[in-house]
Image (cartoon, rainbow, N blue to C red; front, side):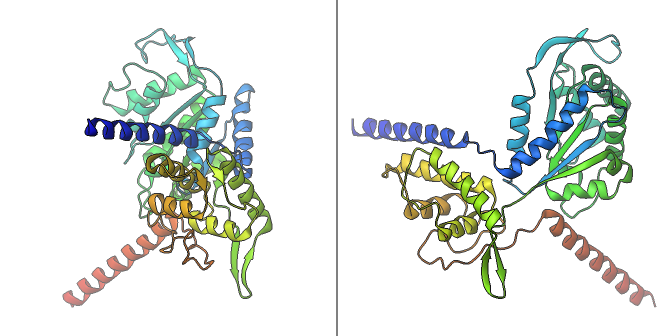
Length: 370
């Protein structure tokens, strides 16, 4: 009897935690960076309604939890409805069906170690081709993908996590794929959007023709609210006001009683240190807070004690830039987080180390052969 009651209580707490987690996970705040990015993408999507000979592409870059996936999700949700069997297919060499679905945004995640064949299969799969997996030769897969894209005329082709085309050391690993993406844009006139981490930029640095097809780069970055100067820590008023507004919007939508002064600059510094100014981590900390309340049956009050536990549970030491000191704890002295480095910067360092190692090996080989 006691065991049954204990399991019932546990089940209730888990159910409550899942419910509050979903409630906070679904929160959305259209902050300034998101709004600017959305305006650029909406303009691109509207171009498909015209008769332009050339369709451009857009590059979306950002750190983890900077909002790239949220941007994609919102654009897909609001781009229009999928229309079943709305497109007539006349060339049955490239399809086993006579009709196809109209999908406003054809989107998928770039495969790891991508090739032309693997990306072509992902395009066919996203377009609803029932035999997307069939055919092993690149020419057939490319032809089918190009035909269906050109015929179905989606508003955009969006490839997320496109940084997989560049390895972590900054090595350009998908030259043939980059060339095909350029041809795909030219032949189908379907705008392309590539989103991912900053090392994706290498794909364009090494392919001038692809770079020429993409006319804009959207940066979803952190809100840099404070700076270290010779006179001490100085706030960037514009960034700080934006960050505080976003924080207040999220806090006010949580099922917790707020015990914090959201206009307090010292609280803003704590949140800035905890998140490096990345909105995704603000949401993650608040989600962790409501989960703790649900699981541990704590009073539903949002205060520094709860935030300290939430940060410890969700963020501490789990991403580059986080501090060893809990920003919501008593030991916090107002320090700023480490400067966020992009993965492209890490790649440059790795590439330099590789070059130095190769130079050393060559030098040793020369010395041994003298």
